[in-house]
Length: 206
Ligand SMILES: [Zn+2]
Image (cartoon, rainbow, N blue to C red; front, side, top):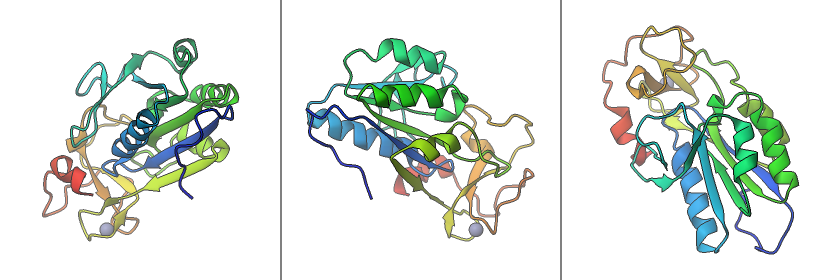
């Protein structure tokens, strides 16, 4: 069941989670929902972690450069101070906010807001990556997106690391990953697929 733009007079809030591997189109889906809310003349606010300075300080930018203006914040609690009269709150790159994002989203929804959260649900080892798994449990709606496995062409549920960094996420290093399915994924860093192409530039066609 997909969430819809609802009666703007409703005071009931809820949480939507958009999750999946890298290159699965999470940010594109977040932007699509926020644009539809704006068309419905609902006040929309968008936040992203200040650590994610990959492309622009003030825009949520997806890989197809489909940008929408956002506010960078240092912590999840800061979002509570900034939402004002917003009806719809979008949060991108949820994995960088840590566990405190869960009670923050719960509070926003309790205050009557529609909260749309996008982020990675697994790390590069294929382990659940908080806070998105906990958010999936408390959310009213969960959408799990998939990229395409660059090895075999099946739906990809994993972000395969193809560099040797020990960090859980290499910020701004999309070239260090490629999407892979369950069969082709390995928890350890691997060499790129033999026909590895620039996944980043082709992600919008997913
Ligand atoms: Zn595969």
